[in-house]
Image (cartoon, rainbow, N blue to C red; front, side, top):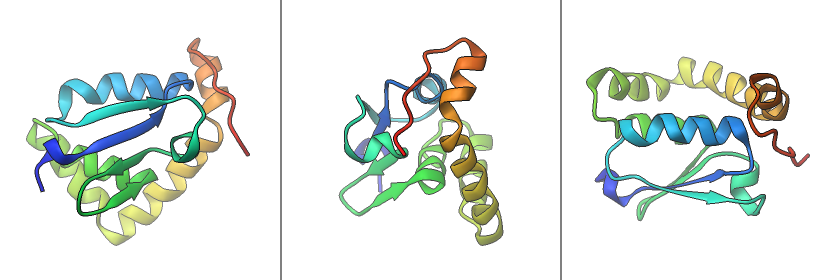
Length: 116
């Protein structure tokens, strides 16, 4: 699968999400980032889609990192796919996602409205 085949949907109303995408964009190849405003799947988590599948949350992060231009970030993406690391990454991702509004506010970024 070519990274040009990836579309990443994210919550652009979230400061943390927006900053994360700003960090990722120059580091990944050919991924199209689409900001969603509190609509559907992107309001709950990062979603990456291609012709062959769909990844969410920590799996989406790993998929994006495997498309990175630098070897170290591709390696991190591969490591995030390993079962034990993926389990821990899932817990961390869900905690950050649940607290992203507070994290954004404390960092001075646009604080999103987290949908529960």
